[in-house]
Image 1 (tube, rainbow, N blue to C red):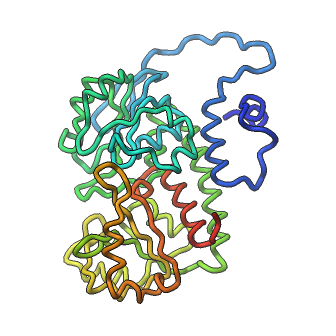
Image 2 (image 1 turned 120 degrees about the vertical axis):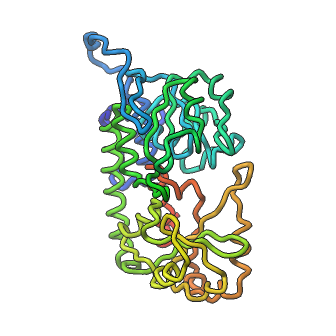
Image 3 (image 1 turned 135 degrees about the vertical axis):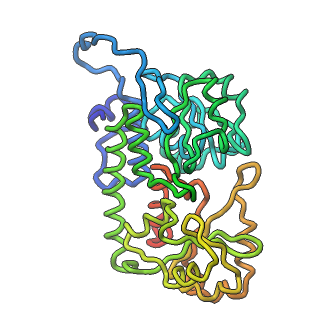
Length: 361
């Protein structure tokens, strides 16, 4: 990665030294900028030419070995989390999926804040089905796409059709028959190794770990050991997420010093069966949710806009208003893109917690 001096001298939009207390947003912008200025001209004599490397390399994927360009130039990311990780790794992204893969939806604000160059990236349609014609017209030289569960066939995404367009680098986004999410750090490391960007992956993880540890320390005085619940409301009840559900925000609460509310285990224990560590609970049992903070997952409408209809149903429940978290103003809304497994989503969750629990804007 270029030094801070290189960044300051090569990037017209930045000036001065990097402040030691820079905000996380500036950190994200720094990471984004670093990938763009690596090729800035220096003041010394030009480096001697290096011998050309191989034109292609073979990478390991769940669908078998895939030969890709050693230096890809036109990368397309099929799903939202693929887009986020491609940006973090500094891949030459020409098209990616925004919220829920709806082509009309904008990229999430936290993605644009971290990587302003994404404004020039085409938004592709991957939901409710992948638009193969659109992808082919983009002429990618690599497509990156996660696979879900143990099924690497075309049951969920048309991988075979994609392979007719360009080499497809797949990886496990979730695994097993119950589609349990693979931790975001593991996903990023796998992607980094596949594209020979392991250093970028480790640098991001190291900076994230530093930020998370600092936030945990700031939360310690008022929030250490406080209890959480993650819910996704529907018309007939709410989906309750347990500590083993695997979603990045749920797992990160432990790193931040928060613990599941006792009612989480109680309600999940009463459920007929858990799917991916979660279960739908009747609103009749809402009153036992003794959490200090409730994270509410928002859905996405057909056009990719945020759908708060479930929240409105939740707020209309008489028992909702009596919950400790509601009475104390500790209800935190999360968009579904943050709830996925990506390096950017995990970092965005730190920002959400910081603002909601510490009042930092």
